[in-house]
Length: 355
Image 1: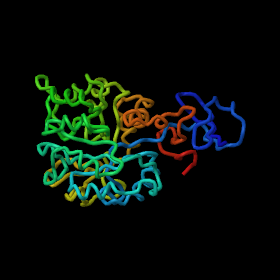
Image 2: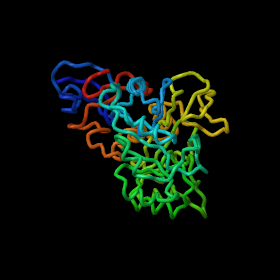
Image 3: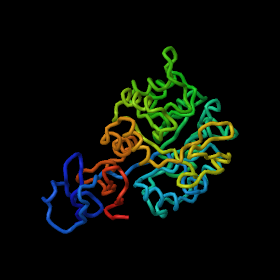
């Protein structure tokens, strides 16, 4: 048994016992006997879970080479993640998702997120419209470990696809109106992809998908990097959905962790200047942020710290059906992060081992 001593959990100074890769006990500091590492009043939270990220450190999911990405995410406090594909050729999507996830190392890779190619070209964002197609289960059957799919519900065949699909379906890159979004949620969709970005906006006579998701109990992804969404709109979304249904994501691209420059994203050139990634048309093209940075931004925007971390841990775990992750409770996986009072990362634990 391993002890993590003197860490603040939910406002209480605690000791945490870890055994067999699981949390074995959480008690007030000094209650558990045995040797362990003393963190002197640092904070502890579950390891972060990123359900929407394309790349980092010069690598991209479409490269079908995930090792360096997975190692980087783990160093940045992400203990579980979903490599996210782009709107590219069917052959390239099948190739990218053919990777044996059990042999990568680094953070847990729990499956793939297909962001496209089932999108609307009118809200393509940084996606390549050349490869946009109607939803087809045939493509999904040729891919391995697809756990989440972003699509536009207004395109032909989308509602029937949602009813048939076993993966988590998220509405995004879409011009759908309120009624179409509601039909999609009633058919089984359960999330909005990078809410506000690349979707019909809020309007008092044309409410669009955001109120539909709130009314249907859906989750809302949010890129809370201080660039994609204004702080006031972050606070508004939390009020609309409740803190338990916001899922923070990085939507990071291969430029994350690197300097400004020109990078490839799904076959398109993007330019990163002052840490902001854009296409040649000026559209935002993912982020260069880490998920922990997004959590810190949420806190700086007025979201209570505990709730901000919940949006990057328990909420994505619940969305993706992960019963043993995202929570610091006895019996849960011992994936956790330890931070100082300013939310700087001190140490990461994965499956009961410090990395």
